[in-house]
Image (cartoon, rainbow, N blue to C red; front, top):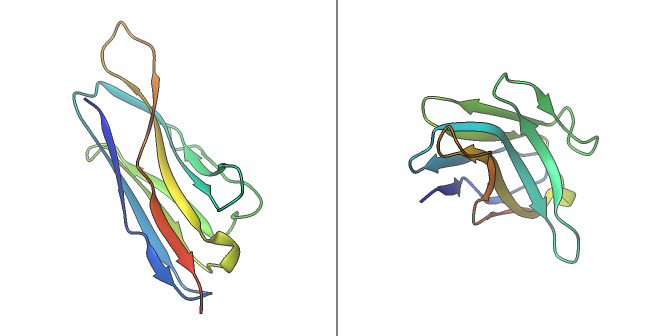
Length: 121
């Protein structure tokens, strides 16, 4: 059974920083893309950052220059460093990964349970 477990969420003041972690566990053969999404109350879930196996990253304009995604292949963990946080960044942040369990199956999508990030004075 594959699990994605997020950690590092919490309350932070505007302009502050926070680092999220996402650890994948289970009998995993390969992890392709790892990504972070977020969903604020009353809004649709949106992509925050993604990273490929080769380390290619992608960010929307709303977080570009402030957020950085990285990954540790040995630990099967993705990170999201968030700097210069704004109130608009308040949301539940979800980890996402495309994972293959063996050589005969395609990659499948997995989601973490989410971690709350609140930016407020």
